[in-house]
Image 1 (cartoon, rainbow, N blue to C red):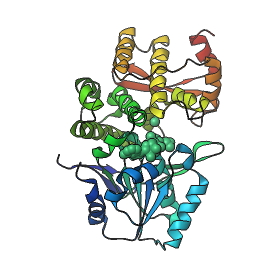
Image 2 (cartoon, rainbow, N blue to C red; image 1 turned 90 degrees about the vertical axis):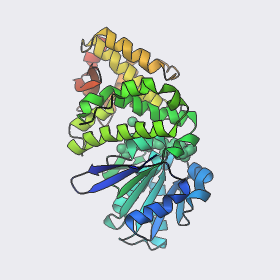
Image 3 (cartoon, rainbow, N blue to C red; image 1 turned 90 degrees about the horizontal axis):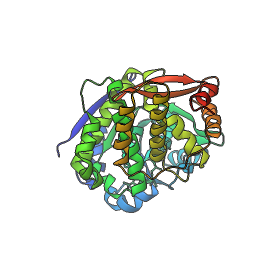
Image 4 (cartoon, rainbow, N blue to C red; image 1 turned 180 degrees about the vertical axis):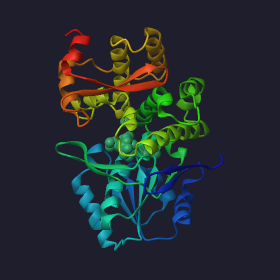
Length: 357
Ligand SMILES: NC(=O)c1ccc[n+]([C@@H]2O[C@H](COP(=O)([O-])OP(=O)(O)OC[C@H]3O[C@@H](n4cnc5c(N)ncnc54)[C@H](O)[C@@H]3O)[C@@H](O)[C@H]2O)c1
Ligand SMILES: [Zn+2]
């Protein structure tokens, strides 16, 4: 596979996302070739270190335990102290190797250490490759909720190797696929110059995707990145267009919250949120039933396990407390046509009356 490079342009900087499937052992050299030899700290997910540690061979490392709850203040502080002990200065670099948890935390550290030092992302989950490593959001969780403290901070470069995806467990793989499926339903609204026709691509390559064929995954990741690039370059700080990336997320976040972020993966919850969005769009006469049937059949091909149906009152209460809710009104991204979405606002009462509660 030849190297694919996507340039992301933000207001402050431009950085490359490099997709290639060369040996994992070449990564360290490749990074320093790109940014010059520097003092560094690699923040590596525990599982990734177990599987790839020897090949990656980054002696200066902080190993982050696995799990969403590790994206916390305590680890933030520990990493800062490690960086200070190692005498990292403003010319040093932080390298994040892992999923979105490592990326978000390492990004937050980088953006605040000495008022900001260079940061490299090596996303190793499908979700991180297609979503969290693009767009410059960094975050940690607090006792009051997820991602409530963070910054917008762009990396110096992102290195993606689809080989990493092979060792993901099924739960994490399908979690990432949830975001990929999301992109297929919002593609036209992303206003990207290229047309990927992701829905067809997914349909035509189902078997290779399930087998995690590196070349097919590389194409898939490339398409998702180009779609996200198109959105975040037009709306870096989520004032408007970027909100469409939340398709399936309003309801999905509530499902995750109700289950304490344990029972269902993020992608599974997003898929349920997409199902809910189609349901709501039909009730509001935004789409005809054929499109909803099509979406339903399409999603079924990925064999997501069914999610327990929750009481709408309970879930609406949670949705209205979400940080993206606007003075009690709940925002939904809803389908309006094939691969096209728009943003709608609902009061709790409107939702109840549509579902005639
Ligand atoms: N910054 C953003 O724009 C953005 C967008 C979406 C999600 N996020 C954040 O991303 C996080 C979720 O990321 P995630 O889904 O990657 O989860 P994760 O980072 O928790 O990784 C999932 C699991 O996979 C393991 N893993 C990683 N790479 C592996 C590999 N190659 N082989 C085997 N195992 C591997 C990890 O160790 C971990 O146990 C959440 O905290 C979410 O808030 C951020
Ligand atoms: Zn998501």
